[in-house]
Picture 1 (cartoon, rainbow, N blue to C red):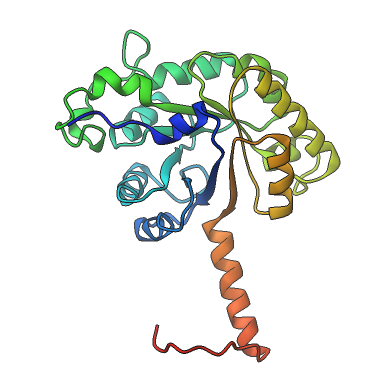
Picture 2 (picture 1 turned 45 degrees about the vertical axis):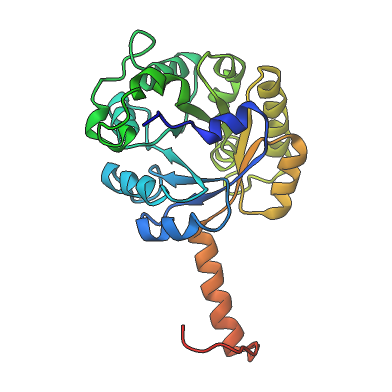
Amino acid sequence: MPAPINPFKAALAERRFQLGLWVALATPYVTEVIGHCGYDWLLIDGEHGPNDIPLLSAQVGALAASSSHPIVRLPTGEAWLIKQILDAGAQTLLIPMVESAEEAAALVRATRYPPEGIRGVGASLGRATRFGQIGDYMTNANREICLIVQVESLKGVAALDAIAATDGIDGVFIGPSDLAADMGHLGKPDCPEVRAMIADAFQRIEKAGKPRGIMTSNLGEAERYRQMGADFMAIGTDVTLLTRALVEHRRRFLDGEVPAGAESGY
C-alpha cells in the first residue's frame, strides 16, 4: 500500500485556489456532514474549538471518505502535540501565533523525521500508516507533510519576511481578528488600517514565494482578499453558519415567511 499523497500541498504548489471552512463544533458526525459539502479543505480547530487529540483524530478519520482535505489547527506548536496528530493521520497542520523565524524552524523540525527533524518514530500505531500497512510511510512523510504558520500579531508581521523564507514552511496564514486586536482595533478586522497591513503582508509572502491564506465570514471581505491574491481561504465557520440558519429558520416561521414544499417529514 503506497504512502498517501497530500492533495492540498500539491494544490498549493501549483497555486490552485483552495476554498475552505472552519470546523469548530468538535463532533465527528458534523465534520463528516460538512465533508460532503464541496469545500476543498476543512480546518478542524483545536485552538478555539473544544477539541483534544482523540477528538481531532476522530474528525480526521471522519473525513477519510470525503473530498475535503482536513487541516488541523493545534492550540500550540508543542512538538509532542504535533507528533501525536501526525501519527493520527493528519498531513496538514496550521500552527497559530508564530512570531519569529526561529519558531517557524522549530515547527518544521517537529514535523520531520530525522535527520531533517525530531519527529519520533511510532506512526505504525496510528492511522498515518493505516496501522502499519503503509510500508513506505516514513520514507515519504517528510515530503508530504504540509506546514502552515499563522501570523496574527504585530511582532509576527515584523518578522514576516524571515518567517516566510523559512525552508519547510508551505504557506503563511494571516489571522485578521487577532492582528486587528493587536493593532488596537479589537473586533474590527475589516477596518482600513488592518486591511492595508494584510495587503502588505500578502505582498511580502508572495515575494517569498509562499502561498497566502486567510479566513473571514464576510463574503464581501472574502472577495477583497481573493483580489489581494489569497491562495487558500476559509469563508465561514460551522458554528456561525449553524447559528444563522437556525435563527433565520425560526424568524421566517414566526414572520409568516414559510415557503411551500412538496416533501414532508424530516
